[in-house]
Amino acid sequence: MLKIRIIAAGTIKEPALARLINEYIKRLGKYCSLEISEVRDESVPARESAAGIEKRARAETGRMLERLKSEAYVIALDMRGDTPDSEGLARKIRELAGRRPEIAFIIGGSHGLHQDALTRADYVMSMSRLTFPHQFARLLILEQLFRAFKIINNETYHK
Image (cartoon, rainbow, N blue to C red; front, side, top):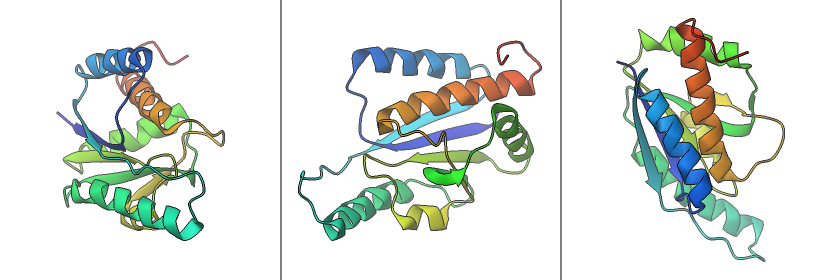
């Protein structure tokens, strides 16, 4: 069974969001082995300099990169990445399923991922050109993974 790992900055504090995330984790259990790994997110003071923000983003990203396995196919979620449709994501997962033992998605904190993550990534993907809170990205990728597996298995859901 394909292993999917999501490595994300911060914890989910909103109970309603946590319930939705847990629902998709449960649904995905039929299709893959799923692991969510959280790293401490960096708090950034309101008047932090650009250099300070970069330093904090690098530290946060470094904690995520430490959790990656060398054989994992890494997909960095970043607003500058490609924006596949649901069928495109399903094709990518189908292609990778036989070639890599693990697909790892990395989700940065409120200031995004440091360039180090984009350099390490095998693929950089954007969920949308819209801006969302980083906690929503976790729910969105879980829903899209569920949708992708439904597409891969020719099951109804995605239309």
